[in-house]
Length: 116
Image 1 (cartoon, rainbow, N blue to C red):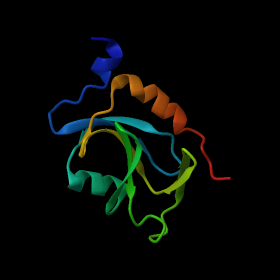
Image 2: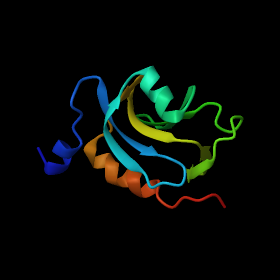
Image 3: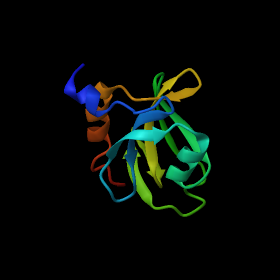
């Protein structure tokens, strides 16, 4: 196993590897995010909304971000996001850990994407 994979390995079965982007902050790697509805809601500050990027990658954001007046966060794949955004893997209808090889690409995609 490569060093990068060890660095990003969740400690328990209920934890997943995610990339989290808070408004005004650079994205960060969270290898120990609890994979529960409550933890995801707490992270985004309310009801969650899933935005599918591809078959095995999703963004999770606050479903009421704009109505709640949450600050602009980033433009990701041409779409504006307000409030905290979580990027995780997906397998069928479940959220799963990102693959360690996906993390550098996701960090790069989420940096410096200001609203124009």
